[in-house]
Image (cartoon, rainbow, N blue to C red; front, side, top):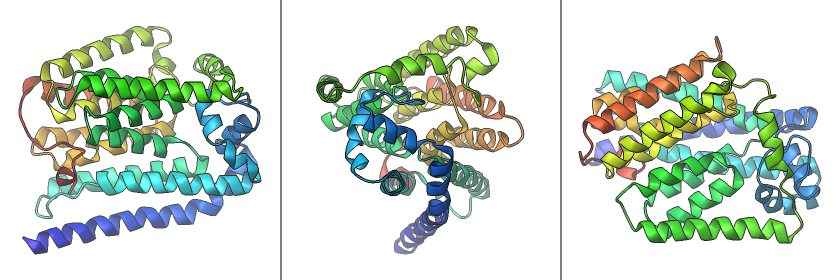
Length: 348
């Protein structure tokens, strides 16, 4: 028993060190690219320096307020600090989510390999842009690992006040029977309230949110539903959301429930960029699921993500198929007890 556990640890450590090496190699290119192109961290930096009002800033004012201490540094130095923060966050997520199937299971090993290739590409892309997604993934992962607790409510609230998309996780958390829903919701609302009040008191405005409403219909490189279905995508997305929530409410105790909104985030219908596909990293532990059908969920996400190199719509198709497969499994077996995809034992 000791030998397999030791092998699992070193295999995980080796895979993790590959990601660490990638982040170190990309570091100078990322800082130069952000400086030359002015995205994405330089936009955050400008918003922090200008009380939340900067061209291209499409987030709630809390993010600009929270990183305002970095404006004491030159933008290049601040970019380096931000890169380190995001790298630490994504490496934490990867340590938990990297799938390590049994070496004798060639099918799962193949899926794990495809997942890792897709993940490396997205980690590098997010690192080069100076995106905030790594931190968001970590906050949502912590919430998933502590369901129904004040910690879960606070971390999910913090993620939602940094960027609006994690809000969709809230109703799926509330239908989960695990923990105390009242304390969870109380912590969530308290965190949202405090984090909304602090930048307001400091004089930060909400122009980033109004700019977000405009950019959804004008920005390029959109690979979400809106790009292909126009305004009808909102009706389709509402239907997907309601069906997904119905399936989750019926299951209640299935640990995979929290992964349903993760896939919905990558579908749209708002503005979805290739960098946002990194949310699928959280699907990795399903490769180790005792339910063989669920192995296809991260596989479909990975194939769709890699397929965007050929055609942008591949990600949308892959994620819709992954969502359908996950919903089918949860609906068919609503009460089957097994390891949570977010638990350390399921991820090992």
